[in-house]
Each structure stands twice: as C-alpha cells, then as structure tokens.
Length: 87
Image 1 (cartoon, rainbow, N blue to C red):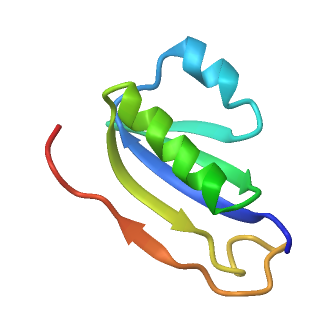
Image 2: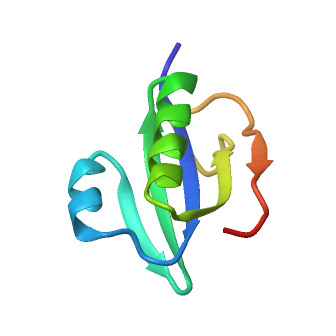
C-alpha cells in the first residue's frame, strides 16, 4: 500500500527542535496555525505524530488524509478527522 499524504493543523507554533525531527514533512505557518503536510507510511505513523503533538502540549486542530485531487500520487479520496477542544 502506498504512503498516504496527510495534512496536520496545530494551533500555534511548533518549537524549532521539534521541527528538526519532522524533516520529511512540509511545514508552513498560517497564523495562528502551523500546518504539517507530507507522506506518512501507515496509521501508526499518524498516531505517533498526534501523540508527539499532544505530548508537547500543543492543540491539535485537524488531521486529514489529502484527496487524490490534492495529492497526485494518491488514487483514492481522502478522509477527514477533526479534533476540537480546549487545551
């Protein structure tokens, strides 16, 4: 199964030392959010990234698998999952 491209939105800014660990993902800052985007090999990688974000005390806004239109390498539509709440 090919890697799926995911987009992860986080409230605020990720510390530079953590960004160094995420070198396989594209990072963009769209105030007041940081957006990570890139391939994650499987569901456990997605869960691991979400756990890391949670462990840093950052507020997760959204995790979604990009649909084929946004990710030419993908042949299926994306699924969306939102996490809302206060931190």
